[in-house]
Image 1 (cartoon, rainbow, N blue to C red):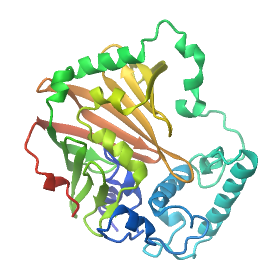
Image 2: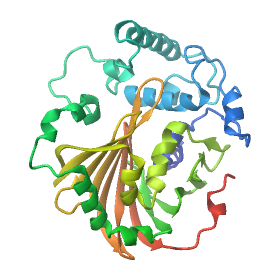
Image 3: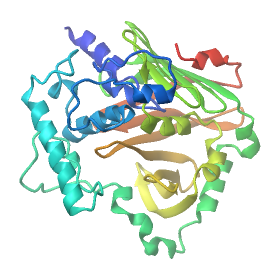
Image 4: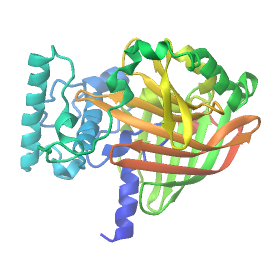
Length: 373
């Protein structure tokens, strides 16, 4: 296969790394059936063959589990699986993976009271072969993992604004409550690149409440990722429709929310300012938005302008948390509302860079645009 063809195929496989969802990292051969039955019936249907260690994991959580493994080891599907025959046990690495998962489960059960303290990444750190010698340089853990939210020192710092003040400044920075509430739809177009390789035209359609479609126009055909406010799916130029795992749907709803600035307080039970951080050249305020379950959503706001610079969220899987980081830049005003024209979405071993060239708001959008094919 030529280099251009390889770049296009890779783009088709990771095109779901969009501003809403990261599901289609693993459209490389699981062959999920195209079905229109309801969610309960889908969950009851066997969708994967030859499951052994993960046989009791709900089908909806298997793709996120595979995502976590590829991120933790820095590999692709074919490292363990035979392409187009994922149920085969031909590769020794698949047998090894099963033993390692069993070992990890046993350690967590016997030593950490069942808490998911040890994961694939604990040893692998992005490498297929774990490093046994300590590194001279290393990266700090995620703020969430460090559990700094429980640090009382941050609460006593007089130089930090309150969470309410941070959100209010954000609302005013993007245009104010009335301007944000007036946006019922948004149509964006531009280009997207997948780390390396050529750029491709992209269209992003958003409509309240929480509907969004991202269409990347590839030489082989369109690749689409869609949320209809409750359910999501992905369709590549070839192959069946793939359902979006529930772990990714919650993040998709955040990205599709055109009133996100004014809905933050409604959607999260607790907002807490943690500390100041550097995001590029900007001084930022780090705010945790949390609910009763799950890791916090990390929001980084420009201390000077109040605009959102970065969002870091974590999708759950049976093996660990899958991080997604979105950086926002090049804000411009459209109909009184500030919209970021540059979005850089990063997951382990994956980067997607979107540059928007045109933004139109309150454009009529038929609900059929978000209907499952």
